[in-house]
Structure formats: structure tokens, C-alpha cells
Image (cartoon, rainbow, N blue to C red; front, side, top):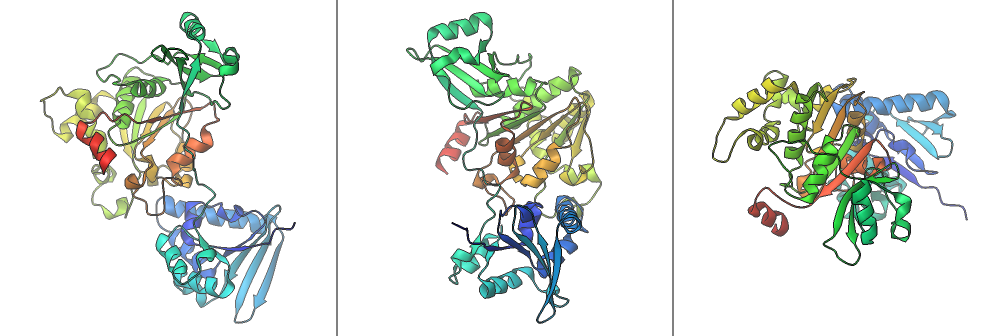
Length: 437
């Protein structure tokens, strides 16, 4: 049975979210109308990740126009359609009209969908609702390609015999094939495993899977900040393991993600494992250009959560130090740079530890651009809470943000490790807030 070809109209925000989105619709036709193209033109002159995403769209279009069959049709009313035939896909239709290109993109798309009965793909909830409330719910949808519906946790409990636990403790290793019938169907590189005695749940062992062998967790160096739970023990283990260049960690507020990363990071730079540390948080909103001062002055308010995590690292209960004093002490002990996402394009970080906090506010495209900066001898930690109340970017959701995208796409790589932690350690109040509100 031949599938019916559909026509998808892409909103500007979809193209910015994923510059390769025109190739994501299999055998169906994809349309970029003139006002959307014009909006990309305007935004490409700005600075930062949005401008770069626009440039990436034009790079893709140029490549397709140069390498694929192209035809041009002039239609009634002065409309010009450039039609690109894509192998193993449908057609990409680029629309142009000298007057209509200046129209407001959302209004133009609404009009087009009413007339053509095509399908609008948009990250804009209000635009989708506008179409739904006039009876066009079958003609509008969110961009679906990058959704992650079942997020990998990075941890699994396996019931085994006491003999296998004894072998693991004695030999400090256990080949995967020794599990026999106990082996689960799916295991991933650097996945954390808790072996539990099938007859006595109090007899356990923690391990991590590396190249088909279960090994003890990487040793955590002696330091003031110590793990308060098994979850934190696993997190600090993967942070301290410099053989893994990319680690991701997810969890509720107060689980210790940033504190543990900064504590291990400070130790690693002082120990000479890395020469430098970079602290980075996505800036959602108007960006740095709207703020006064030089880069470090602009970044200071955004970096306050990092500074807050210096208090338990340096201070004892009851002691006080100003944020400036804490940051000055931190920066006097190790080489630290505060960075913004808009400045990382084209950089290569070597022998550097990069900690990215609030990574749930990255788009998948931004996450790819950021992780591709990691050079020889470097490690990147992506930390965040990919739940609705922690996402500030209006076009992202718990299933489409850059953090979950990296977790899902990279879980098969030997270069990555991931852990989702649940135990909240900040305070009893935060435990109840997360649970009840």
C-alpha cells in the first residue's frame, strides 16, 4: 500500500531548533514560506546560538541547491517556487514573493494552512492552539523528531546469586558473560549496576560496566565534600573518572548535581588532571547584549548558582563570606573561566574541565554544538533537571531539550556516562517542595 504524501509547513522556530529539520519528514513534502525565510534572514545577523542556527539552515539549503535536482515554477500572483527533489525523501519547496515575504510569519502560516490544508509544524504552543480552536487540530503539530519519551537512567539493579557477588568482591571484576540467565536484555557502556543477592536484598555490590566487564566504581579522591548516598557516590565516581570525556547527570533541585561536579572539578584541576575549568550556563531571554559591562560583569548574575556551591566547599557551618570573596578565593586557587554559550562557537577546549549547569535549557542543536567543543584531555559535565518547572526556554519541553537529547543519543557511546539521581540532600523542606508542589 502506497503511503499518502503529506505537506508540512515549517515554522521559523522549528528551523532554529533543528537546522536539519527539512530532512526529517521522510517521503513527505516540506515547505518553507517566504516570511519564514525572511525571518531567518533577519535573525542571522544577531549574535549567539540563534544566529548560528539560522546560518546552519542557509548552509543546508545551499548544499541542497548545489547537489540535488532543482526546478523553478512561477505561479499565479507572482509566487515563485524553488523545488528541490531529495533522494530518499520527498520534495523541499522554497517559496518567494516580493511583497508577501514581508508579512508576519505566524499570520501567513495560519492563512496558508487554512487554504492548503497542509500541516503546520511549530514549537509555538499558542500558534498551535490558534489552529486547534478553529477546527484545524489535524493540521498542526509539534516537531517530533527529537522527542525522548523514555529517558535512560544510567543505573540498574540486577538480582544475582551470592556466589557472583563473592566473585566480584574477590576478583574486583566480573565478565558480563558470567551473569548467564541473570543478565538483563539491555546494558550500556559505563552503566551503573547494583548487584543484589536474590535471596537477601541486604547483600549488594556496586559496579560499572566497561567493555563487557563489571568493575568497581572509580575511586573518589579524599575531599571535604563527601557522598551522602549511593547515588552521590556513583555521581562522584563518574565525575572523577577522567577516561570518560562526557558525562550527563539529571535530577531534581537539591540532589547535589552542581556541588558534586564543582567539588570534584576543583580537585581535578588542582591535581593537574586538567589545566583549566570553564563554568557555563545557558542564558535564556535577551542575552548578554542587553546587560551593562564587560563579559565577566555581564555573566556574574548568571553565575550566582556556581558561587552558592562554593560555600559548602570552603566554609564550615555558621561561617560567612561574601560571594565576591568566595569567587576570588576559588579563582586564586585554580584557573577558572566563566563563559556564555554565544562565545563558544569555533573554540576547542583541551585539557579543560567544562561544567554546564541548567543544561535542560539547551536546544538539541546547541547541545551538539557545545559538546563538539571538547578536545583532547578534556571532560564536559552536563547537569540539569529536565522537568517542566525547570525549563525556561518556551520552545523546549521535558522530552525535547538538549540535555535529554544528549543522554538518549549518546548512551551507546563508550565516551559517555549518565546518571539520574533522586535523593534530595539540600534540606527536608526541599524534599517536601519537590514532592508536594
